[in-house]
Image (cartoon, rainbow, N blue to C red):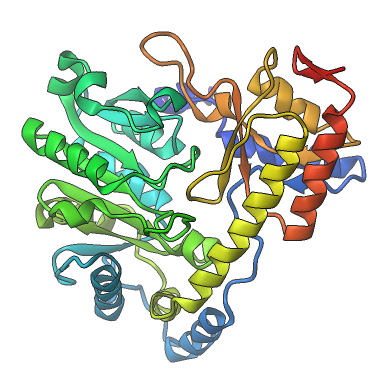
Length: 404
């Protein structure tokens, strides 16, 4: 019997973060426990108040039954109330919000509602793989929009997107605070993006999963603050409340977009478990644990940035997210540098930038020359990683990435 994958599956490579997991396993097979900054999966315990709410909810929902496809009314009301407190936006919980199984499934499946064969989705590059691959699975064409330090990771859509691409585009993804660069967008930039989308009839899909992980004096803004018309914003409890394993989030915005998304979702899954939604309600009602988490990520950011700078690398102090987008030494590729850190005497795991970006229309890959560190290791291990990296590069010269 001939077993062959579909053309869609054959057209894509391995998922970047699965490759990182394999690198970690190879070190463990040698009896080495690496310091892992590869995948953005918080290792901190989910806050006690959230765990307790989940425990109580398991008994409350003893007769489990299928959960609501779009989220329980109480969850949607809690999410809408949080959006009101946090961003000052009014969201109708009945029609303008839908629960999601984290944000990954929502981002991947969003294209199914709006992309037909031949349509284009504009995707930040580097960026979260589901923007790109969800478009491919919907038989659309992802168009990579380069994010570069030269433009402060804030590309001008009007100037950067060619007219022929713009005419075919149905969706433009934006992501701030940005993964992996750590850039926090000023309100004026988001306003330009939303206005550009409305002027050209292009949906602005705003991935705001990192909205609460920021180190700027002013908290990040939401695209929803510029009005809901043509805007869908995606939120997750994963990073805000260390709830990656719970798989819960929500999408909010233009009622017409949410209606279509609900139709897609009800044909794909059976909704977020009710007891998980109850845990998320508790998480959304509390900001103290979020502030503590931000402080801890700031400590880790500063410690690792200091170690990398001591290794002779360019200074990198991001404004938000839980990532460092570190430029590698001259003469080394992102994969070369990441492999060097996998040497047993260093045993530090990061993600090569080339793995989470695409070659753009000009043939260059904007992720090349960078690696991404996810600040998920405990503080003491983060300090240790900085020391190991500094020591590994202390006897090498900057020519070819080594110091003499």
